[in-house]
Image 1 (cartoon, rainbow, N blue to C red):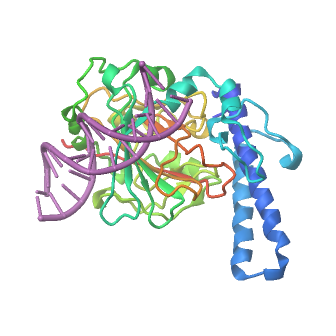
Image 2: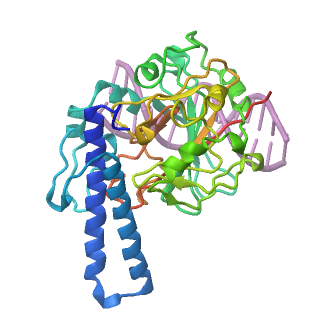
Image 3: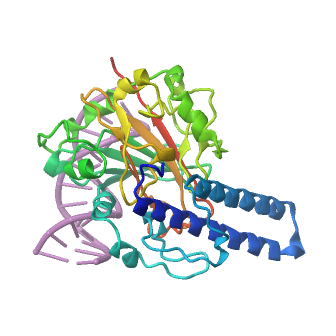
Length: 354
DNA sequence: GCAATTTGACCAGT
DNA sequence: ACTGGTCAAATTGC
């Protein structure tokens, strides 16, 4: 990751991780102080916090960050987008504006790339589903959309489903190669409907096993089960990066290329890794150019992720970006990275109508 | 004033 | 008829 990762991105990511780790440590201290009620739950909580801290440590080590205990270390700017929490666990305000002062212009692009256009109560779901589309849909015909659904089982988890690819110039600058569908389309429903039914499907055998193995290093198994179609299920358990993390679900059938997957598999939907400067989170273990550069409209994707966020907001999806090749996972400005529930999960499934 | 969000209505698929 | 997805007017925030 870091080999091809910009120094700025790396620092940003490290800062984010440091903040998370620091907050986890503070929570650990809080839990330890409550010795009067050493209940089972508390003990379990301490263990979980320890695991979370361990995950941060692993993530930092993966970034070759060998800094000593950060208990006294203040995160250094530039801060990444996920540090835009208004307050930290300690209550110290983290100025959103101050962070933005040092942000790369492309970050602004990514942060503004999603516009909410609807919200719907979903049958059987406790929380409404939010519908977002690319801000540049009208002007540039970018058909990328995403849905954000809060998990019933774990309200701290948001399932994010991405549909379509960013074809806008902004996304191209930050994420994608030159758009393949530069023509401007009317912002009508028909323009986007076909994508919703032209999924590309890969078999579990086509999954980037090597990538999974690599990613599993230092990863935690999560058990949340996303809403996936039966044929997309696989026996591979989901897992995610050390928090803050990305969870790859077993039905992640996207192709990581070039380093994550075999050339044969990568041909399927022509994914490459790339980075978006502000986040760096899409640089899965140093892989770059993770881009969804579908050359034809028949190749589409559904990428859903569950991004854990603070349990404060009941229905609002997160809005702080974690750029992914196919879109952004965003976290609410109210979300504090200090919340230990920060685990993002990531699910990618594709179908092909052909 | 402009852009983003909210929210009820509308539409298509089942 | 029901549901999910989208539209678009109204509202909100900067």
